[in-house]
Amino acid sequence: MSTALVLTKQEFLEHWLGHRKLTRRVIEAFPEKELFNYAIGGMRTFAELTKELLSIAEPGLRGIVARDEEGYQHNLPLDTKEALLKRWDEDTPKIIDLFNRIPEEDFHKEHNLFGEYKFPIYSNLLYFVDNEIHHRGQGFVYLRSLGIEPPHFWERF
Image (cartoon, rainbow, N blue to C red; front, side, top):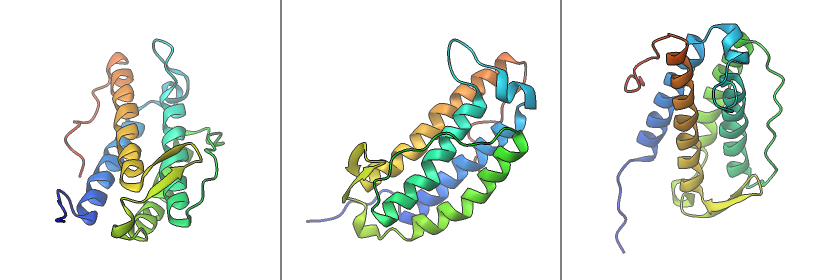
């Protein structure tokens, strides 16, 4: 049986980190008040969406590495833009370290992420990136509706 390779493990990580850099710039683009109070059409504020992203990426990777299925914890006490950005920046090296601890041969092994999502590890990893892109898109809509030009989506590095 041959193994198909589209991206190396390192290329995937670099791709994800590029998305994290872009999402960070979206957080930065928000005025403090609107980051925590502005929402459209019943969606959550971008601060709430950012807290979700922070509750998933690093804790999810930690669970994968430890093969722990601890439930999702989303009540982060981060109530300023500075606190969100600080946590974002603190999590990035942890994400790099944890990701690098996952043996490549484990990517197709099942893991029950947060005790709720039983999929191969590669699928969990793709979920982290897909979820971030989805919520960043909501942030783009918010910024545009506030008259703020969001960063270009293709400038991830």
